[in-house]
Image 1: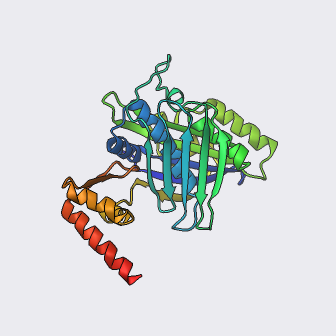
Image 2: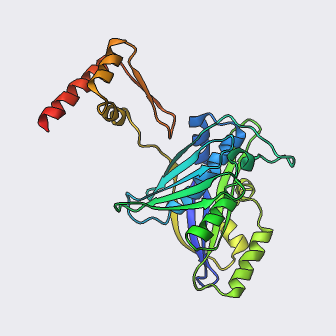
Image 3: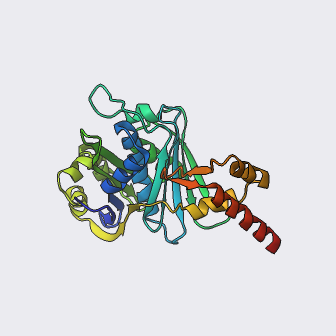
Length: 297
């Protein structure tokens, strides 16, 4: 199986910038962590893929991109976050959707809905992140990101993204292909990209056929020059220690109530669905540590 990575290239004498991504293993991990049915897996997987591609242009290791769909469809909120190190995570409000269109394809647009916005935040380590908002066009993810790039970042783009789900529900292939016109693009370059977009096959099918990302890029842009490669992976930095620190922010009375009922506490990470258990003894230690830190302050 092709490894998960992003290949960055330029074509047409530097007039077009290209990002091609394979995200099969990443999206399969997301499916497993969130117990996703096919349509939910496709909606989340497409969002994870484009967000990972956007983050591949980040420079600082602490920078990150967050993309969120709120289309008021049955999927609820679909959110993905990726950082400059290639770590990607996310979640979907309802992981149990299996909706199919009349043509047999998964109904991702119906799942996400169109009565809402796509919000993208770029955290560059400054005081406030840059946030752009655009109206959801179709809920199919690719169209919506293309519209976002045009409206919020003034970058004409073609966004192809797809997730191919096997009959057994596992992820067979997942990936994305984004090409963007740079400011120096001529009318000929624009026309060339329009022709490519009209003939382009679904990227998940190309990956499933065995083509490498380099081959996919050169299929449509024969003169493409490969500039960089970035490894990407499903990763969430949550831990029991982090949740313990969060519990420490609760009032003493709230922690004592959990201790006294002897049921302990369970904290579940929204991003990766991992559950962390805290016994009454754990909570007593957290309360003790909280008092120590308060005295030190």
